[in-house]
Structure formats: C-alpha cells, structure tokens
Image (tube, rainbow, N blue to C red; front, side, top):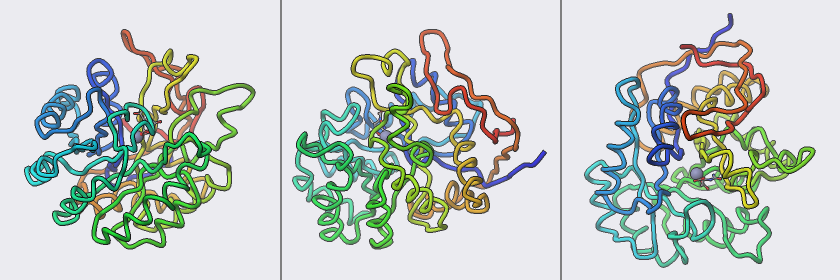
Length: 344
Ligand code: NCD
Ligand code: ZN
C-alpha cells in the first residue's frame, strides 16, 4: 500500500467546544494534530487568563492520556477587553494569541468587537510583545452582500490596520477569496492566513446541490469556484504565509438541519486526509508537510513537532453520522469514500 509519512501536523484554528461536545469532539483533533489553536467562542467567551486556564484543563482531561496534545489558548477580544489581562496571559504562556470577532459576524460572536479601531491600545500592546492577532475577517453590515463581506473587510478594516501596526502579527483566518490570497501575498511577512480543508473543496454551489445543503454551510460562506481555485493554488504554492487551520466547528445534526441552521463544518475526523486528497489532486503531495506542519510553527515562533504521522492510500468510507450518546454530527465528507486514511 502507498503511504505518506509527514511530520505531525498542527491545527492553527479549531473549535473544541465545551461540556459534552468537548468530551465528544476533542479526540478527533488530538488523534491527528500535535497542537491546536483553540477558538474562544464559548458561552460565555474566554476573556480572562483564569477562564483560559480552566478551559485548557477541561480540554486536557477530555483528551486524557491517549494522545499527546497541546491546546494553545486564545483570548476573545471584546470592546472593553483589558490589555494588561491579555499581556499577562501571553507572558504566562496561557494565551498564544487573541481572536477578533466583529460583533455578530458568526457563531457565538455577539460579545465581539463593535468597532475594531476602539482596540488600538490593545493592538499596540500586542505588537510590542509579539502576540498574534487572529482575525475573523468579515464586515457585519446587513447592507453588504454576504458573499462580499470578506473582501469589504480587507478594504475597510484590515488594510488600514496592518498599515498602522506594521509589526503586529496578523492571521487572517479561514480565507475564502482570491482577494484575500492577493492581500496576504502582498503584505509583509507579519501577515499570514489559514486555509480550511472544506474551503479547498466546496464552493457556493455545494450549498444548493439539488436542494439546500446545511452541512456545506459555514462562515465565511464558500464563494464562487474561481475563489476556491485561488485558495487551492495558495495552499500548494509553498508560500509560508498560507498554512493549515481546519476551522472544524461541530454542531449537532438537528441544529444544522433547522429553520435557522448553524454555521460550521465538522472536519476534524478526516481533516488531514481531506487536505491530502486535495494536495494529491493538485499534484502537490510533496507540499503537504510544509503547509500542515512547518509554516504554522514558523509563523507562531514555535518548534516543529518531532513525531510523524503516516497516511495510507486506501479507500476510506466516511460515515454519514458520527454519534455517541446524546451527540450526533454529520462530518465533512459524510457518505463519501476518500483516498487517504490516517494509519492506526
Ligand atoms: C464557527 C463556529 O461554529 O463556532 N462556525 C463557522 O462556520 N466557522 C465560528 C467561526 O469560526 O466563524
Ligand atoms: Zn472558526
């Protein structure tokens, strides 16, 4: 059987949730990835060092001793976030980064920032201490078409921000457009982007394939095919500004299949396999390791992982549903057979 062995990857953007969902979902990330940047959009959000420490303990205990996995915690920025709290958390090694959600841009972002530039003092401090700012890059105005929100965010908010804070490390998370690829490529080496497994594979038509497909709905919403093609090119380009971040975001099947279905795609069970399939289709399997396991740590200033994982090239039937007690989730690639499987 053909195999592919790479340095163990990290996930630079994941939602592990809390409570029963955390107990259920965390193992899927830990079985693939050595480290993950854990999103803070819990209810209530993770805004203090103490809350992050406790959340990190809950993650560690959910994962148990089966996997060696390091959760990297993030602080949820609000209008009145305290710069000292953020800086203390970073200096104590609890916070790896801050996450900026424009208020109401996505799931559990109601407590997010209403006016990004009100946080200039916080950005100033982050820039001084080298703390990365992770951005959900969408404007929220109902006047802006949902398919244009990322592009408009770049023009109105991100471009001036990176000009005014040239040394601030910025990750534009889960990019979905050619405009983002171009912006990040042209920016300084302080600016990078994560790319999800699903945005490399779906475009907006997948949400309407013979009917409404709630399991293809996430935010930022998938765009036209030409944007997906630009993302694929960026991912396999070998440009160190683009690295792996799954944005795996589990929601119960019944919450997605409702009259107002939640945004989010649960890719953790097949994430590295899905990326491998995409890279293979692009004739670029040799570029997977750098994208998945090297460029992220370089950007964050962290060491590379020493361990490896092996993928086997074999028919891998992804289940329609992954369930356990009261949780049932339709995973990314549900019901499909993909080419790669993580070796046991
Ligand atoms: C995420 C979630 O469910 O928490 N949803 C999503 O569609 N990606 C939030 C986010 O990252 O936007
Ligand atoms: Zn996310």
